[in-house]
View (cartoon, one colour):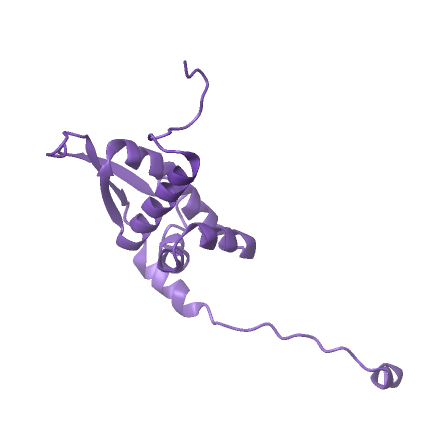
Length: 148
């Protein structure tokens, strides 16, 4: 019995399940929609929504965590386009639409997609962020300290 056991296994071990989840999330972010089985769509939906919420906070440590989980193109699109477009929204970034069953094995299929985000704001944010480098402070020498 699986009483109080959280999550889905999808007939995979832990590493394969994490890899599947990261690949589903990356594909959804890059393409904007994803056609997969209903179980996988439900499994990936919460994960993607958490990724978008973390990307909205724009902290260095969170960005490093996101970069470790996503492919480079997906990470760049998430940070530069998708998360600024959902700035005014608190949650519910994706939706699941049920589609016709798969012909070969009659598996229930679904389309996982982002709801429409504000693309104009995303472009403005991407243009307004200048790429600057941090300037390191130089240490004063003993002679400079004495003069001041």
